[in-house]
Amino acid sequence: MAVNIEAYRNLTEELKPFHAKLIAVSKTKPANDIQALYNAGQRDFGENYVQEMLEKASQLPSDIQWHFIGHLQSNKVKSILKTTSLIHGVDSLKLLNTINTEAGKLEIKTDVLLQVHIAEEETKFGFDKSEILELIPEFSSLENIRISGLMGMATFTEDMTQVKKEFNCLHELFNQLKTNLNKDYFTELSMGMTQDYKVALECGSTMIRIGSAIFGSRN
Ligand SMILES: *Cc1c(COP(=O)(O)O)cnc(C)c1O
Image (cartoon, rainbow, N blue to C red):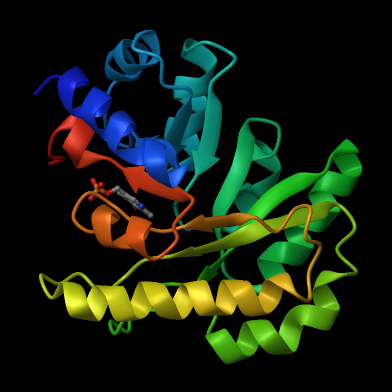
């Protein structure tokens, strides 16, 4: 299935009153599809796999903002730092320390979002809420990292009451952390995918990550 430009335009309109940013999630989709959406005006793209993102980045226009939204392994950090504009899924202190060290070697500052575990499912990655609060003192020593906000994934369910509860919980934590972290950087709340972005927007999302609604379903 080809990229759905009309759905893209409708989404862009729908987002305007919320002042939220659309991250077009292009994982598993060919560079041609990304180029088509780029031609329609989209600049922010999300990818889950390191090698795939690097290959696409090398083939596509250099003003694309690449968002790494997958699970990042420490040994891959070095290879993506220069390409990525924002790393969404940072979920351990070990990973934060690795990013800090590698960014320091490159003499750059790296923007990251802390991934928080908000879903009922056991398998999803992320910090626990209490864990993040305990780590606040450690964050200030990461001098090459800008903690730009939080990212979360709700339980995969049709029950939007449940989803709303989880997104509200993340927003609450966001507000709580905002008083402790650098307010100039700590501004983003990345939540909402194709099936739950409307709820996410109501709950204060500033970045929605949309794949299948734009690019069609994945295999
Ligand atoms: C794949 C993916 C998305 C996009 O999912 P859709 O349901 O296709 O919109 C968003 N966020 C993350 C972390 C993903 O892995």
